[in-house]
Length: 302
Ligand code: 13P
Ligand code: SF4
Image (cartoon, rainbow, N blue to C red; front, top):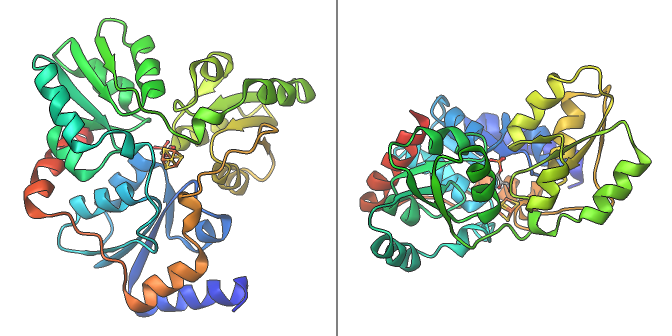
């Protein structure tokens, strides 16, 4: 089947099975096109609570499907490729988190949602890049361990100087490659463009950005700057498609060095079609982990 046939077949199957397709902003353009809802991690979690369908196909990386499953334990949650993991989440294996808890008994542990359900069950609260500053600021404890992303943790520390944050030494392999030289070259060629970067980018990129935003916040940033025609988007390139689709009259540029998350891009139309047809692969979190992990997510959402 060609792309158009596959898209039509997916939409037919989706209707027949009364399934809902929830996708992340980094998904391939053709996946975004067939999705019922496209959002950032926080938006996906919040939206998952409002979906009436019994079957939800999550087009994103594994922890996103796990979060949707935690929030909807009685529904069928599918992911089209179980190998779509998040290397950032792998920086925080559960045994290491348990070891740190012993090492830092007086600290409140905050886990970025880019972590396994087991880790979410072990920490005090979760956050996403959209709410990390607010969550850390509101915690009663001044001593915090932030995991697993050091770049986001450092960004939070800058905005919440009254807290003492111990950073976990993890990073996103995609955002860590954001290249300052490439970005400056793009800015030189487009001097009127605003630079919008994800907080998983290294500090030197965040420092020269006009806005540091989660993928969802990038949409608000563009809305808040109606006078600006061009934006340089320093994150995974799927976001450029999401923005271009929402704002056809503006121009969204990637820095000359493209950033691609191979894991996000594992979800293809063919795999999505197979997932719907065969109702695979089911994502389910064991009960004992689910209850504790859900507590960390619920605290974040509250
Ligand atoms: P957002 O929460 O901003 O969508 O980011 C998720 C992610 O995986 C970034 O790399
Ligand atoms: Fe994980 Fe980075 Fe891919 Fe986001 S872009 S899913 S943090 S590897």
